[in-house]
Image 1 (tube, rainbow, N blue to C red):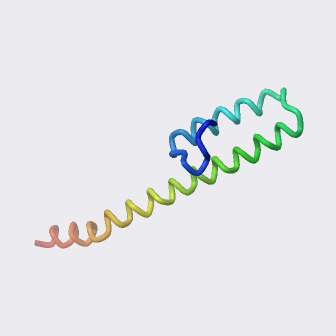
Image 2: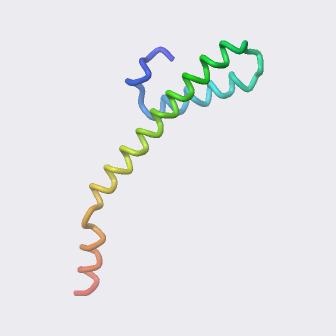
Length: 76
C-alpha cells in the first residue's frame, strides 16, 4: 500500500483489502504482523464503507424527484 489510506479510491481499497486477507489467511504471520495487517484491513474497510455511503447519497440526490416525475407522466 504505497498510497496514503485517506487518498485511496474504492477500487484500490478493495484490491488491497483482498490481498491483505489472502496474506493473513496463509497463517505465516507473527501475532504483531497479524495485528498490523488487521488494523490496515479495518482502515481499508472504512474507506470502502465511506465510498459506498457517498455513492448512495449521490444517487439519492440525483434521483430525487424522478419517481414523482415518472408517476406524474403516467397519469397524463
